[in-house]
Amino acid sequence: MELLDKITVQLNPKEVLRQLHLGTEHLEGVQELVETTHSLIRPRVIYEVSYVTHRNENTVDIDGVRFTSRVLRVNLDGIERVFPYVVTIGRELENTATSLGNIVKQFYLETIGDIALDHVGKYLEDHLKRKYGLGKISEMNPGSLEDWPITQQKNLFSILGNVEDLAGVKLTESLLMIPRKSVSGIYFPTEVTFYSCQLCPRKNCEQRQAPYDENLKDKYKI
Figure 1: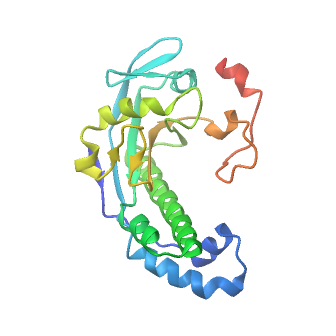
Figure 2: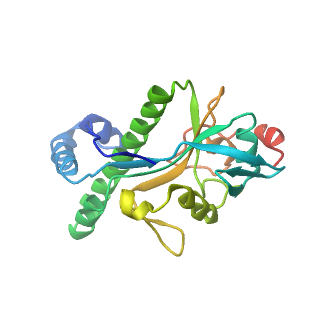
């Protein structure tokens, strides 16, 4: 198990301004919130160097743990080594946001927390590429597609061990993570970058990373 906790996140107020869809007249206020955020985030990453041990038509075993997903199985064709992970920025920011008593500021702080979480995820991606000599890598996250439901979160956590002790992230009975500013998934090497968004037809999604590609359904046979 690998733990990364010496992570510095520097947020750009202008980037935050764009994410919040605010004009430059709000820059000073956003700068103050960004400074507040820097004192509240506690980035932690845990990941495991794991290996594909078995494949069936719609399942893949990683370190002996079975995952049921046609998309994941196809994505891991010919791949032996993968990297299950959990990333978080801790509880402090969301606790502060909830206690503000100001819905607008709470929304702003929550959004800044999401941006910070993305930065920590990018830190992990760069770390994996550098340490393990990887080129392109992609990821999949339990619950991001109907093909790989949130119920598979338990399987992922079982590979990582005691995630609550290691990273401070608890999995609830409804399979959500606490703190909420956390994300889990599996990174894997790939020649062509994959985004789950490419298989999701939902419109008007602010989190979309790539356009929906109906032709990919044939590749994955879903």
